[in-house]
Length: 436
Picture (cartoon, rainbow, N blue to C red):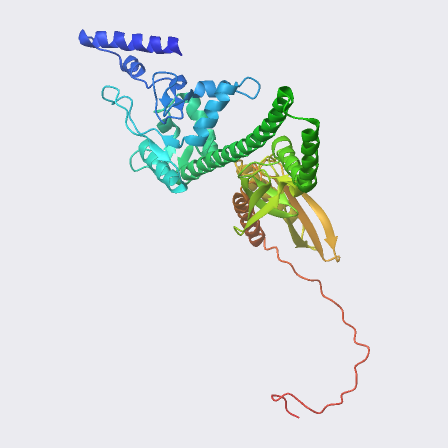
């Protein structure tokens, strides 16, 4: 990074000398000399671009993006992990709000901080207005290359839904991406805060126990503690163990569940006893869940340790199924066309579904109808349950449109009804509109 900075400064100095001498500088060389700082100089935790590879942000050092890309669970140090945790817990998402080429004497303008979903949407609108051309409704690849290198711009386009194929980013897509990024960061910050709180409580408990042991040892060393005193102390310990034994067992089980098993984090969508809930808060003894109707449910960790817990957030890309019934007499040609068109729709929605879904005849019911199942795989898990049902709804809309165009309707076969005998008529009453 230092060599890159030195080469850049030397190039800028040479171009400046040529300009002062009155020479005509080629546009390509001038543009190269006026580029923004390299990607290695981008620092997270500050919201600004700096020439130095790291900065001091309210007492916490930032970390470069290149350095972040090189980190993994095997080579990350405790110091770097602490810096990252401090950035997530105490920092905020920020957007660059300065023009490097037009900055005066290196003055830094304030960055837009994102601390809520409303601010995230406002930041997305500001980013769109800054990146997109005036009056344009989309951001194109050429617009992004004005701010970053070509390979980075291509990677950036792949982050947005549908941008890889259409080569453009809509305002709605950008807004959803920024809001999701804020939600992920907020969930991670809440997880770190809850974990730190739990660790602090555990630390205090251990300190109390160690203090008691040290006090007893010092009493023994100084000869103050006699046999009668030790006998009295042991009897009191037995009494305490009898009273708080179950509580200590529960606390120990909760600690093992929280720190060793660790089946979820804050913000994860989990399924417990067939009920889907989002983890809201994690404590030493209890976990707070938020149900689909925003009802808070508090469950003790010792009880959760005995239950099967499904975690949607940690799951890989998940599958889905759509089933429908057709008439037994439906022509085979129409069934083939339905399969082809469903396959074509899924193939064209590469951001939503994996290709090559499985379409099978699942069952025949009452010799009048056939059940067909479409088994397909999302390009996401079901953590965002709303997005799952939106994609499923789009697929169902397309299937209904196909059925209408092919005039596929469900009709029951004619039924033969044989009446062998009728009960005798014992009433002379007739409807009012009948004539005798």
